[in-house]
Picture (cartoon, rainbow, N blue to C red):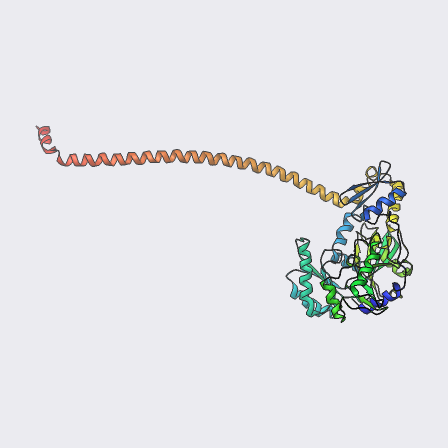
Length: 448
């Protein structure tokens, strides 16, 4: 992270600006906001775990699986879940991306060689398939590779990832922007500022954090995403020669976290009106080249938010966090979630009920085909299991018969041995009798 760059952004976009105030009854959670919007359009919702189904009368018109609308196909979801595959897919289709490669958990030395030969600059290490900024270490050099490598693997283990892999990509300095595309069209954009405080010449850093959290609590989206000064934050302060108990001079900005993540206490600033047409076309193309994708959150890095030069796409998020612009801390409130629901209503007017029209099955065709294959395999497996059980039963019966035959054979063998023993005893008695019986006298009588 370029700390000095973000300090300038904070002074430009946040210092001396009023934060937004929202009504208490608007629903700050994702599901709460969906319900709030649906009531506005006289729609009903049915919740099932992370899934929300939307109905007009008794007709199903839309589904949210988590934050992913039903219009996102299983193919698009599968590609976007794989960060490396997303990067290569976009590169193939002419979208500007950073250089990257993927490595298995035991390929640290191969990664080290790749960095030395190709990147030769600062780089990023991140998990192959985690989201939410987990396990990412950015803007590091080779001497920090092993620590970043292990951190990424540990985060994957926490999430019980079966096959551990890391992505190594070149570090692109600049500003990270989340741009939302709804139904193939640019919708809104938000700048995420890392957790920070601004001095007033009176309060300590800890006191400034408490005051800022009081403001965040009043924001429906940020109220459960408060700033916490953890061990990592304290270390970052020490690197800036600052202690949590220091009183900051008025206007001085102090960064508390290296990641511009709202979950970690960052601020969400709406910058929709700043986005130039050239960048809008890039994010629209990004969504367009992804098979079966129409609504997504695109993470883009630009040199600055004044000229937006040299943009590169970092990630494509099918579970786009539309709440960033729904409840920005500063800037114009947008309605991306409402726009998605309006898009669902438009589709309903064309296709009718999702189930009756067959649209839902068409959207999820690859997934349905995969499920069909799985069901067929289950049937085959059931048949094989039945045949296997029959063979095992037959084998058991044969083994039982064999055991019984073996027992009879053993009994006969014992009897034979007993007979042989008795025969030897009789032969011995006969030999003894023969040695003492006067056979010569009998023979004489026989001759006469």
